[in-house]
Amino acid sequence: MKIVAFATPAAPVRLGVLLDTDTILDLTHPACALPPANGNDAYDLDGAFLPAAQRLVTSLTDGNVRSRLAPALLPRRSVTLHAPVPRPGKILCIGLNYRDHAEEQGAKLPSRPLLFSKFGTCVLAPGGTIRIPKQSLETDYEAELGVVIGRRASGVTRSAAMAHVLGYCNFHDVSARDYQFADGQWVRGKSCDTFAPFGEYIATTDEIPDPHTLGIRLRLNGTTMQDSNTNQLVFDVPALIEAISADITLEPGDVIATGTPPGVGFARKPPVYLRTGDVVEVEIDGLGVLRNPVA
Image 1 (cartoon, rainbow, N blue to C red):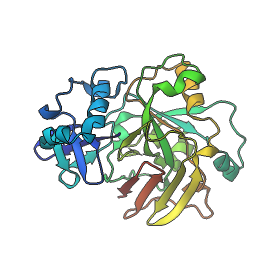
Image 2: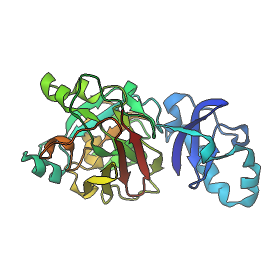
Image 3: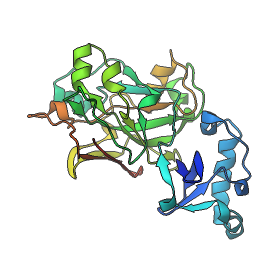
């Protein structure tokens, strides 16, 4: 199932499912007859809404069901996509988590996940404009695999971790390097407005059986700048959930950005930074393409 958040000119942001390249099922439409869900409760695998939505989508193979749901089917071209979790409770990011990226920097592999955060106010929709801060001359790109939590996780062991994952998405960890390095810590440089584009959709775990064998790429104005595979992760998804949940409770709708591969702008010689007029695309196998212009 591919979960999207979308709006139409006549209605505010709500959840749906991308059924194919051209059709979205509006899960909030009365024809779907789903239980109500408030905020990020909609992403809870233990709640009433999400399991019912999954059963409904599975039943669409029945022609009679699809006919009944016709009023809830919308052409994709008629909607505006938002980030698939419009306001995550937490965005938790991991630094230096690709072996080939550490090699690129000549850095020693970390002994435990290097954790930092982004604020919900920096979330950006697919197609939304990344805005370079007026004082930044070194704003950088970073393609990442996003992991969306679907079940409350506190003190979760590695062996149980994957049961707490709802699905995966493209994530772009935009970073103002001059802010990041000048401040001596990463909060401002990572959390400027528009610095967390992700989507276009969340692919649930049944669609991505193994998140550790996915090609991950970033293109800048059509030129491939990053090209690696999630098999290069230093700490895989279960290890990250175990490490984070030991101290920080993860909740449905939280997003973990798992780190970036080599090819980032600041490590190039000469460096390459985002500029007005650029277009950045993040593409991970099975997760579509996240495309954002820059201004």
